[in-house]
Length: 398
Ligand SMILES: Cc1cc2nc3c(=O)[nH]c(=O)nc-3n(C[C@H](O)[C@H](O)[C@H](O)COP(=O)(O)OP(=O)(O)OC[C@H]3O[C@@H](n4cnc5c(N)ncnc54)[C@H](O)[C@@H]3O)c2cc1C
Image (cartoon, rainbow, N blue to C red):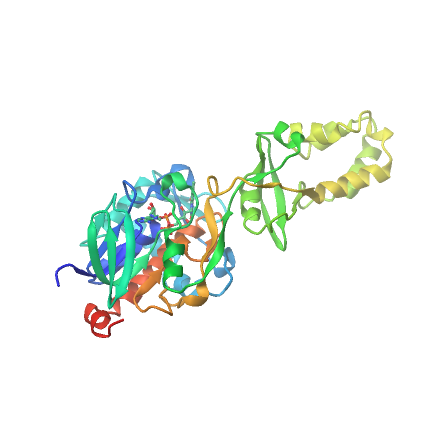
């Protein structure tokens, strides 16, 4: 049966390409179908063009999921070190930027080239839209380039983020078709919208903060934008923010402004609040916060200074929404992990069906975690595939 592949992988992004490479190396005959014009488009724009391809410190704690344990098995089966071994073997130079985040020295194109070089033997069709999928012993995939059949089907079509790069809800529709549940997708790692005009007036100002959403805190930079808030601290917190939830920001983490501001009044009574705050905060933010308090520190009651200091450690923003999937780096939610085996991301309902990467309800923090999940889940599924055979799928009438 020449036209029967061991596996068809739909989606040639990070997860699909990596899975195809691993499956091919294990001797599987694989076909990858991509509806976009080229593979790995998100990889190319990631990490400002340098791709933050993994993180030195990856654990299930760095991921959101209805089942916080689900990612553990795949992450343990293919680690950041394993990916680094591939980078080193390919001679791709990399560096740690901050917080364990690893980037290419050169360009994200090197990662796509690495993934394509690994494809050995796998067939890749771009510009190939998928019309429908049937399962009658084998998977029959009707596409704009004809019908293809395989014993196994891997869905690697990602989430809803950045529709202009080919994002689609295909994974969710297909999951439902085969009886799987889908955790409602929502934008994550996404800038927040805030209606207050003073925030837009500070656009471009960046400050190191501790941002808190629910129980999670992130100590990184906050950036004021024309429409609200962004920067790594805010993007991280956005993934944990409940709808209509408040973002709490400590503008002076590790300091005690409640004591420091009244103390400054005693040591520098003639200084203005703007100047004192300007030593702690960016000048434009300090000027905004000090505007209601003209005059010298000596003119301000200790009580007001203490309240101002305390307020800067617990500054509450009430976002009116997010910039949505058009700007979200990832999609939280997705194919429910309850229907998947954590060992290989295979369906518990339909043998031979797999879901990997961002399509699954596993969402990483900012910092290389989402790519590590793509590599690890792709690798896990490839291992699952290689334990199944064409004859197994067909003969058992699955
Ligand atoms: C701007 C930006 C920067 C990012 N930077 C980083 C970073 O530095 N580090 C990091 O870890 N993560 C980063 N991410 C997140 C990361 O890119 C994703 O989590 C990762 O690409 C997910 O891989 P995936 O293969 O699951 O999905 P994708 O990479 O989205 O790939 C899915 C593929 O499926 C194709 N597809 C969709 N529907 C269909 C269909 N119906 N038929 C056929 N093909 C289909 C798509 O065209 C796409 O090629 C970034 C995301 C964005 C948007």
